[in-house]
Length: 386
Ligand SMILES: [Zn+2]
Image 1 (cartoon, protein in one colour):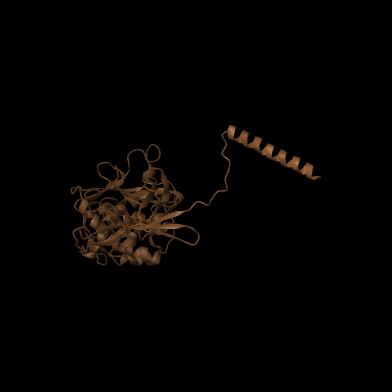
Image 2: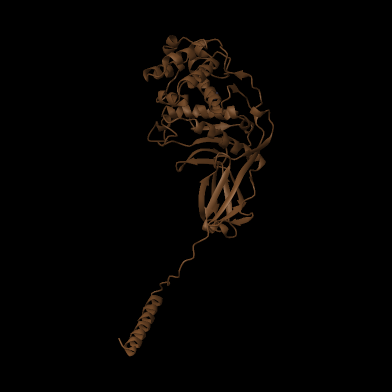
């Protein structure tokens, strides 16, 4: 190739690239520039709530907002990232857009796992979860890989909303111990465990099957035992598959057992076999999830410790709670119980019979039942509501 030919070829190239450029511009196509790697910004911090807790003698203190869903949003409200705080209330919200001005972080009184809300606290009037939103701010530090960390100042839940987060935080204890069996909380369809809670002081704590929800008095959110007791009723209902009853999933009248005369009920009172069973179960769920064999009421009374025998056998919820705690200890925690609860059991005897059919550790569980004044054979034939 002569110098002349080379020069001609170079002119052609220039002309061709000029034509190509004109075509691209005419078509409105942006010409790609070598892209600089986008900087990732990670907003890191911890959510807190100030709560007095009945189990701690109402010693008010800061608690970390564990299992709280968070959302990172841009100034115009676009969701940049979502996640859930760890058990110790920490979040790490990373997005290339998190470094812009006007970005906010919201904590919600909902707890998600496996892509779904699993439990939540909602307002008793609007039935929507509570939220706390703060502007993203804080010192920025750049790591060797270029990631920028924004140290978000502590996110503090408003004092009058602390109970909503104490409910969320406490229910995680049941989630952590739920076991791997059961119709709910293990991947199959399940309604979120919903607590209706707000400033209302009437109503106490009650599980309402018709609503599928727990309704909790404002002050009852101080007691972890009360929160987990009501959750225990909901769990019994879902383990029995009752949330699937009716005209399609989540529809129709929620079936529940006839609990007879169950008001008042207490750990040391004799009621009937069905009332004592469901209340005894709920007490045991709370005590086992907490690792605390008392029942501490919202006013701080810790006057139940489930290691005493009451009259009368399986008509006393205290006996059933104590026997269940013994059963959980010797035979697989909640896991095997959840399996035995696959349909509605209306007495402790029915539940106990189902366990026997599933060939669990009967010798050890029989001993746990006998220890609290119940004959394992007699309770199998105990009639509902007697
Ligand atoms: Zn109850």
